Structures are given as C-alpha cells and as structure tokens.
Image (spheres, rainbow, N blue to C red):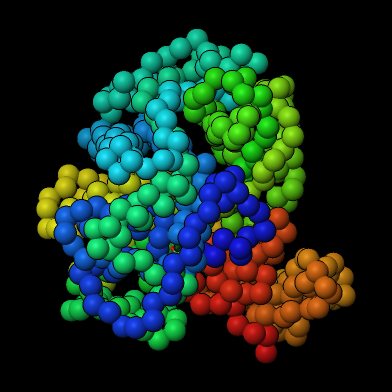
Length: 505
Ligand SMILES: Cc1cc2nc3c(=O)[nH]c(=O)nc-3n(C[C@H](O)[C@H](O)[C@H](O)COP(=O)(O)OP(=O)(O)OC[C@H]3O[C@@H](n4cnc5c(N)ncnc54)[C@H](O)[C@@H]3O)c2cc1C
Ligand code: FES
C-alpha cells in the first residue's frame, strides 16, 4: 500500500507528486465508507459524490500508492482473456456485456476528464493485437469473429503500424485510450472533495464489519460508521476465503525505455503470448518512453526478476532498434480471476451493505471504472445489467478446471512447512537481501539490511498460514498462496492479509 514498500519506482511515481492526506483523527459517520484510494475506490467515491452521497475514503498509503501507481494504464476493450474464451465460459450475451462495459468505462473516463478538466494526458488511440508466433494466427481469426459477435468494431489489418518490425496480421481495435493514472486520480480526488467527500491517508482499516451501521476500525483508534462500506483494496482484506479461491495473484514486470520522439507510432500494442507483452508510449520532455510489460509469474513462486527485466529489454531491442537507455524498471501484482472477469458487487457470505471490487486481471483501469459505475447503481438501488456478470458470488461451471488447477497449486505451497530453508544460515545472506531459514520446526523470514543488521520475522503469512518467499527485485516478502505482500521489515502492503508478519519467536 505504501509506495515505498517496493524498491522500484514507476514512471508515474517519478513524474507526478501526490499530496499527502492527513490521517483520520476522530470517529466519524458517513453514508458510504470506501477503503482504498486506487482507481476502483476513487471512481466509486467520485460517482457517488456526484449523486449527493456523503463519502469518506480511507487509505493507509498515498493516493494511487497501490497498483494504480504501478499500472501501464492502457484503457482497452480488447479483452486480455479473449472474447473467444469469454463466450465459452460465460456465454454469448455475457461476452457482449463484457465488451459493452469496458467500452462504457473508457467513455466514462473520457467524460470525467473533459467535465472535470483533468490534465492527465488522456489520449484516444488505436490498439493492435498481433500473433506472437504463426501458430497464433488462428487465434486472431477466432478472436476477430468473437469480438464482432460481442458487438465491437474491430478489423483485421496486414500489420500493426510499427515500422521497425513486421508484426504480421493484426487486429485493430479503434477508440482505445491511455492516460497518466496518478494525475487522473489526483483530478478525481479534487472533484470528489469539492462535492463534499473526505479523504484520509495513513489510515489503515484494521476491522471491517457490515450491519446497521457498518463499522470500520482504524489503526490509530477512530472508527468510521456508515450505511454502506466498499472494500476497494485491490484484493479484499475483509474476506478470508470465498474470493481468494476464485482468483490467483501474478507479478508482472515493466520497463520504460528511451525512444526518440515520434519514432514509434502512438498506439497500444499487445501480442498473443502467454504471458503476453503490452506496449505503449508516454511523452516525457523531449523524448518518448516506450513502456513494455510482460514476463508474468505466479506471485512468490519465482525470484528471478532481474532476468525477466533482461528478457523484456531484449524483446524490445529486437523489435525497436531505436530504443535507447532503460529509464524505468518496476513490477506489480495483478489478480487473475479463474473465469477472466472481475468481481464487483456484494461481498459473498457477508452483510448486504458490504461491497467489494477485485479480480481486475490486467484490466484494472476499465474494471476499476466499471466498479465505480456498477457499485454506484447498486448502492443507489438502481438496476444495472452488468450486475450478474460481475457478481462476486457467481460460479461458472466451465471455469472449474482453472479453479481446480489454481487451488491445487495453492495446496502445494503448504509443503513449504517441511522443506529446508533457502539457505542454511543467516550468515549467508548478503546486505539488502532476504532468505527463508529453518530454525527447528519454524521457518523464519530473515532480512539483512544495507548496514548489515539482521531482522528476523516469522515466515508464516497471517492470512492463511502459507510460507512467504523473498522477492529480490522489490525487496518484499511475497506469499505464494493468495498474494499478500510485506515490506522487508514485515509491514503488510497488499492483502488479503491485513496485518504484518509477526516477530520471530
Ligand atoms: C505492472 C502492471 C501493469 C498493469 N497494466 C494495466 C493496464 O495497462 N491497463 C489496465 O487496465 N490495468 C493494468 N494493470 C492493472 C491495474 O493497474 C490494477 O488492476 C488497478 O490499478 C487496481 O486498482 P485498485 O483500485 O483495485 O487497487 P489499488 O490501486 O491497489 O488500490 C488499493 C488501495 O487500497 C489501499 N489499502 C489496502 N488495504 C488497506 C487497508 N486495510 N486500509 C486502508 N487502505 C488499504 C492501498 O494502499 C491501495 O492504495 C496493471 C497492473 C500492473 C501491476
Ligand atoms: S495470502 Fe493467503 S496465506 Fe498468504
């Protein structure tokens, strides 16, 4: 949650300053309490504020200090789990609703940018999907037909408009967009506060209970009571099991590389790899930065980020020979729902006035905006035809194989209790590094800081007891089960865990 928990800095963090918000100092009452100041929470807060509801937003870090500050901010209706798959899992009508809702989200962002005069470099662009290998040409063909059936205007072109390499046949998705996510959030926050909304930073929600009224306890003591609570913490910190078996956490990597201004056609680009590469440009001063992402892996199940950055760089240089120096390297986490679609709506097995938004996959900019629109309708007691599609309680029989595979993977992580540590002794840990060390029957998360001092924590994740793993590129402890992440000192900054790693006994 605090953006200083991770070692890397995104291009957005480097090119925008976020004013700090004071912490909640006294108990308050509001209509709607929203936890999380990322795109999902702030879109919801802004839209509810427009309708005259009193809103309070709490965040324990900076505005956009979560994954919204680490995104690449493609705004797209070219669904990354593919319409052809969505039709199979959800059905043809639902596939149309997916296309409709993502298109509406891009339009909504554009409308807000215009009406609130937000200076966030919003730009309409074409998007191009091209085959990673010739074997994927059939996929492009099938996806074109499925996107048409979903109601999108998409066309096949002989190649994407990149002069330096021939992508081969590509699909062109018109009216996609990009923006600077942090300056967009700053604009949303300003407008939300103008409408009477209140925003508190440095305020960790420690306990979230629905009911009449809902009650949110915070780290320094004050309590928020509200008619409704929205948990927009990227992955719900109030839900122990239900949602976390239906989505899986993946780390994804990004580089930002210098490119002479105008040397690459401005557009969004994606290939069909698994994991896929995603590419866009951002102008900075007198040059462009080519932003290239990919190389995803399951959180906590690989610790080779430097090699992954290297492969991204090589991929980029082979296709864009004009690329210069690498200026940014960062990573973040995405939540992959087993059936491809986000979970937005009432929290399963909870009071009726508790809502969540999660399972964004690589499309959190649109999913977060959809959350704003859909949750506003639900909270205002209006019908919304996307409700069933995004319902967190839904079960799609055709996604059961993916569900089983992700949960077998999680079950396998508990074997870490009986394996050896990464290293035999703490003396082998270099400054700035961490490792899991076995001490009798316990496993310890041991970090040696740059000054050489050793810090020992329990390696047991407070969510459901898996053993965390060291992430050398971000200097974090990452849980391989459901994606909780902790700073080197053990401070939780990403759920579902909602408390820190405990001290070693
Ligand atoms: C590298 C990368 C590239 C991506 N590229 C794209 C892209 O091109 N297009 C796209 O659409 N999506 C993309 N995504 C996904 C997208 O960025 C995310 O899905 C989206 O930003 C999530 O927004 P959010 O509001 O749900 O969560 P966040 O932005 O993470 O916000 C959650 C907030 O909740 C706060 N919080 C958590 N727990 C508590 C608590 N207990 N108390 C108080 N506050 C709390 C956190 O501090 C945080 O600020 C990408 C993601 C990554 C990592
Ligand atoms: S995130 Fe669930 S056990 Fe760690």
